[in-house]
Length: 247
Ligand SMILES: O=P(O)(O)OC[C@H]1O[C@H](OP(=O)(O)OP(=O)(O)O)[C@H](O)[C@@H]1O
Ligand SMILES: Nc1ncnc2[nH]cnc12
Image (tube, rainbow, N blue to C red; front, top):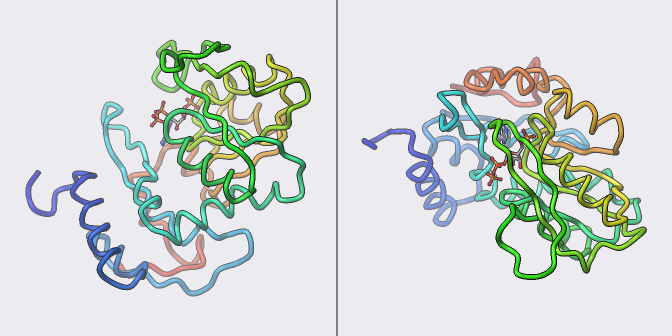
């Protein structure tokens, strides 16, 4: 990849170098990513993560369809903690025994959410990794491939109250499999949290049946549902977000 190219590794390394050596300022991060300057003018309650959405990086590993990845937010200490705040805040008053995260990106958010809520963390893995007794659940996700999730059988008991965390819900196949797995073991799903819950049939079913949290403001949800994400940073204006982009 040449200079100024879009390799995620290259961008992430640039951002990381900047973050480590200079003040933690969003304008600096955006410049380091070659995305111009940005000024955050205000921030409302429950909107912690909005100011970091521009850091969703696009990669084209799905036949050219942009798939946003939250890796850059995870590199930024304020973005990560704002993300976790948005995901956990709605559940602060709920009695939760364990936070569960789905392999692989859900491990990062799930473990951070567990620490935020001062709970333990249970990993739900893609099949084939655990060397203890497991229960498994087949599913199909946005790739159309048949997959299977797996969890150890000795943690979730009848009545265990769970918050399930993943990075993203697109068709809902993965999250619905995790829910089935937990409920099969007797668990009670108190809530479902993901950076984005697309309003697909599966996503809507989850939203209707369970208490959910996400980081996407209502006004931007249609863009995420329609995967109009390549143009996403052009939408960062005063009509949609409490910030002004000088790009
Ligand atoms: O709603 P669905 O259509 O089921 O898709 C959502 C799942 O896909 C993504 O993970 P992916 O399997 O790509 O892997 P990763 O977490 O390892 O990046 C995402 O983080 C969810 O787990
Ligand atoms: N990280 C992600 N971003 C967008 N769509 C997805 N579908 C599954 N994972 C996704």
